Length: 143
Image (cartoon, rainbow, N blue to C red; front, side):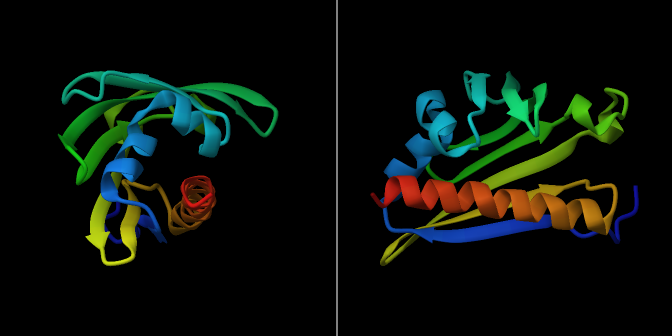
């Protein structure tokens, strides 16, 4: 892996309390509403598996990973592997995805960082996807 490849990052200020944003990140029924129809299955306990299933650009998928860190209403870090990449299911082909929440006077700053990208172009594409997801989250919670 090339350590010079940048992380994908997206961030948004959501006008909602941290507790409500955290619930939206961890409740599968809410996740489905803003995360492109994704069905999440997990306990969110550290060391436990997490799966993301749905359809992306006309293709069914079932991505998977492990919950690495769960600091209530502050930080969620997971590994993530997608068979849609065409790469084998091996540790070097897993991303790390971190969801960080920071209380602000006007709401909650939500930042998603995806590490272990294979190229800068992959990081840029992932950042665009995360921007879309965060935009959907913001819209849902600010209704």
